[in-house]
Image (cartoon, rainbow, N blue to C red; front, side, top):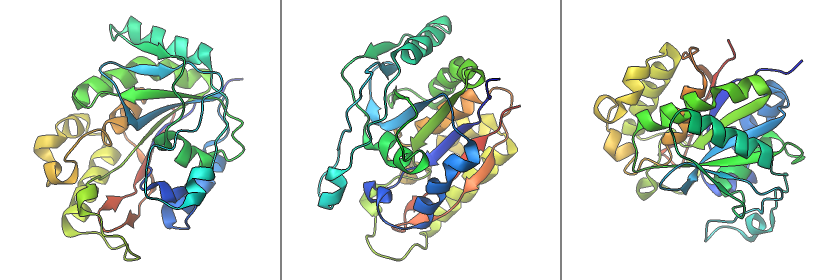
Length: 262
């Protein structure tokens, strides 16, 4: 019998999350046991921006090191998970059925928004991965619609995983060991937790107007949009459970949520 999976959102933080011990690292290292093993993962990454939704259709996606200035050990890491062209085509078909045009990319690999968290969640790289792009020029309602179109994948044993950031203003990052959040980051994270756990879709979709210091917390929106795809894939189960809460570098909230299978 095929397992219906929760849809999940995780904050992937800095690329060093893959190798440095911190609360979010430890959480992700145990998440695979909590979720179980899906047939495949459809990962919505904040680090692939396109005009319209695009899906990787590469059966052997490369590991993309799309960052600079980090320790050499990060550039030596590889996450050789297989791709799944059939799943990519299935997802594109579901999007087309919802009048959302999507394309397949046979050359794109997995960027660090996908492979950093997945290297901890499924470290054996044995679960096929298809990556889905975001459209930061489009709003939360668009990404919610994308997720809703993809909801049937959950009943087919696919984990819909949004990978971004509960907060993301790199201009205010304070490198160091102090994990205590800035006041505005703490306030936004509390608003977000309240909104997702109460199932307040309208509150979330209107986040730009309703969340405290929204423009400061997310001066660009690409790291927040994967949350809406995961929320949309939840279908009627809009109340999320909190999987994890922690902070890094004073301004990165590392919250993670799951929308359980009904």
